[in-house]
Image 1: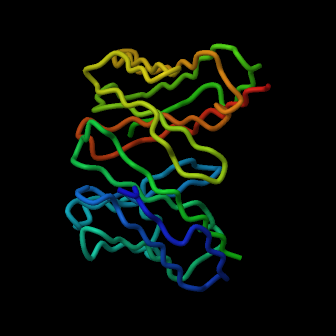
Image 2: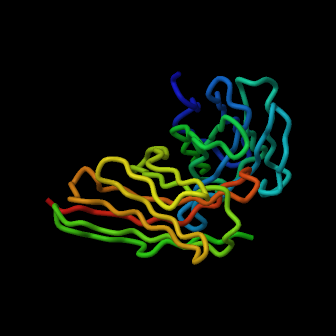
Length: 115
Length: 112
């Protein structure tokens, strides 16, 4: 398996534009997580899915953020409209089962810069 | 809410030294604890995972211990090498296993 795949690796966009980040979890993993990493706050959980259903989105900062998982092999995190304070590295992770003994596998991240 | 603290925030050691990184957490009702490595501009690589029922895990030169009752974990790196230079993050899962809470990391520099 190629691991968790995220795209794009880097994204530079202008304030006000829509940004869509993509994630392909490891096949067979039932849980998918979106994290955001900044220097100020470290890694923060934004939302997670179980079997394509959003379970906890309490970490989503505001209504400008939305996430979907239309099928078991694909998820998107959308920011509309984007703001400079959204600049961060966004990670996707997947896990086999709840409380997996193997922990989580992370993607390489998408570095988002909003100018 | 679980709070995870890592001390020190940065560490610089000469090559060959043994070193210990610390992680503490406020809620001992955890499912497991995972240590990650993050290289600059890269994602997170899992190093070791300790289940709540375990006391330690070893992989090569790395040894991680867990003391749930005191809310502490340590990552021991033996005979450090320049290639060990990275940021090390510990993450603690909730007792339902559905959330990981991350520490802010320890930035390690091993000087040749």
